[in-house]
Amino acid sequence: MTFLKDLEETKKNLLKKSNVFYIILITFIFIVDRISKNNIIYNFSERSYYINDFVNLDLIWNIGIGFGILSTNSILFYNLVTFVISLVILLLMYILISSKNIDKLIYSVIIGGALGNFYDRLANQAVPDFIDLHYNNFHWFTFNVADIFITMGILIFILRGFFIKN
Image (cartoon, rainbow, N blue to C red; front, side, top):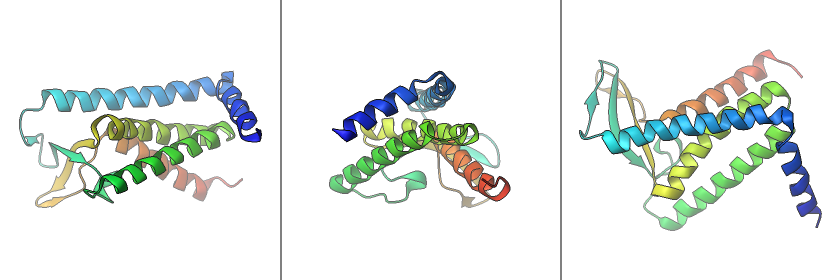
């Protein structure tokens, strides 16, 4: 019974006026990610599209987590990872609600990107990655817009730890 009470309290806190901006930010990031992925998925006819000497568009379907880590053909493992990701997103939402404004901004950026990739895991059983950064023959991991937001949020979180003391 306490869990349901805590869940109801969390729901009330999430919908507080002070949190509406962060919900809008999460939604905006999710929509930007969806638009970018849909444009690539439905308008991409080539295997690889050259943009310049450092960036290509190259659609691949990632069944792992960020940057293809933990990729496997095991459906059980895929579903387990997806379940863990859902728990992490829920935990981040809870942390966001009880955080200060700068932290809320950081968590919102991470959650917005995570929800974009989580949606693809559920809807497509894989995440479309398409941004290929490279220099000569060295290629970084192929990634997407959601990955950019997740990475930005994590980097800001780490930098905040160095420069802002509680």
